[in-house]
Length: 362
Ligand code: HEC
Ligand code: HEC
Image (cartoon, rainbow, N blue to C red; front, side):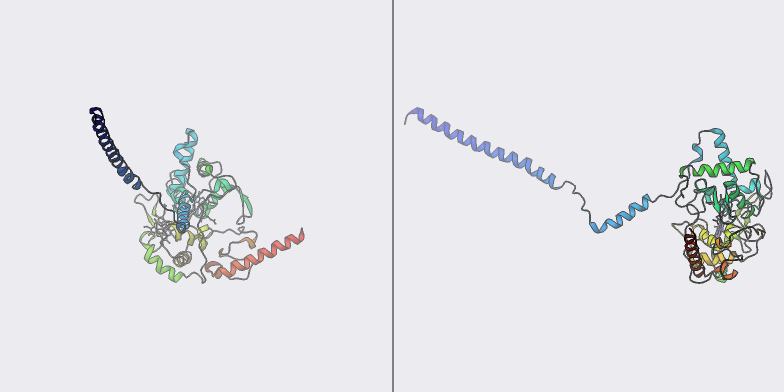
C-alpha cells in the first residue's frame, strides 16, 4: 500500500466516526426537545365535554338569571333639580305618609296614621309587594269598581279614602302633584300599555275548601302577633309620628272598602311578604296559612265606608268581593271565605255566554 492510500483510510475512518457522533448528538437533541414538548402538549387543558343531558338544567339556570323583574329607576339620577325635588317629596310622602298627612301630620291631618309604604313596600318598588311599576304605563284605565276611566290621581285618592280610611287630596295640591310625579317617574322605564314584570301581586292558587278564620287565628298567634300585637292595633314609634308595626284591624286600620279587605289580595300580599323579610322567592307561609290568616284578620272589626256606587255592573265584581248583590246565587259568606273555585267556574261560564250573545248581536 502507498502512503497516500493509508492517509485516506485514516481520514475515512475519522469521518465515519465524526458522522456517527453527529448522528448521536442530533438524536439526543431531538429527544431533549421532543420529550418535554410532547409532555407539555399532553398536559394542555382539555376542553370540557358538554354533556347533553345537562342542557335543560343549564338553560333553567340561565333563564333564572335573565328572568327580569322590573327595577325602579333611581330617583337620584334625575338631572332637573325642580323635578328631582318634586319626585323626592313624592317618595317621602309614600314612605312616611303619616308624618305629613296622618293624625298629627305636619301638612294636613287627613288619614289614619298608616303609610302608603306599609302595603306598597319600599316606597312601591319591591317585586310582588304591590309595587307601582305598571301605573304610569296602564293609567288612565277603566276600572270596574267605579265603572269609569280613572286617572292616577283618582287611584291614589281611592287608597287615601279606603286603605288609609281618610279623605281625598285635592288634585292640584302640592302633595298630590308630588305623589303622581313620583309614581309616574317610577314608570318611565315601562312601555305605555305594558305591565311591568313583578308588579302588583303574585298569583296564589285557590284552596279546595273555604278559608278558615279559626285556623288563621292560631297561625296569627304564632307568626304575626309579636309585631302586629294581640289586638291587631300595631305599634306606634316613640314620638307617635308613624307606626313601627302597622295595625291590621281596629279603628286605625284600612276600612271595609279597601283592596286588602278582599281576602285574595290579603292572602297574596302576606304569602309573599310577611312576616316582614319574606319574599316571593323565600315565602314563609303555606298557601293554607296565607288564606286562613286573611280570613281571620278580615273577620275582625274595622272602619266601614259607605260606597253604594261601587261595582255599578254587579257581574264585574271580583269573586271575593264580600258584599251583594251578586250576579250569581252564592252567599255573601261564600264570596267572603270561599270555596272560590265553584264561583270562578260559574263566572267563566257566564262570561262565555255573554260573549256568545254579543257575537250573535253583531
Ligand atoms: C292597607 C294597604 C294599603 C295602603 C296603606 C295603601 N294601599 Fe294602595 N293599594 C292597596 C291594594 C291592595 C291595591 C290593589 C288593589 C286591587 O288591585 O284591587 C292598591 C293599589 C294602589 C294603586 C294602583 C296600583 C296599580 O298597579 O293599579 C295605587 C296607585 C295606590 N294603591 C296608591 C296608594 C297610595 C298613594 C297610598 C297612600 C296614600 C296607598 N296606595 C296606600 C293597598 C294599600
Ligand atoms: C317582625 C315584625 C313583623 C311580623 C312578625 C309580621 N309583620 Fe306584617 N308588617 C311588618 C311591618 C314593619 C310592616 C310595614 C312594612 C313597611 O312599612 O315597610 C308590616 C305590614 C303588614 C301588612 C300591611 C299593612 C297593614 O297594616 O295592613 C299586613 C297586611 C301584614 N303586615 C300582615 C302580617 C301577617 C299576616 C303576619 C303574620 C304572618 C305579619 N304581618 C307578620 C312587620 C311584621
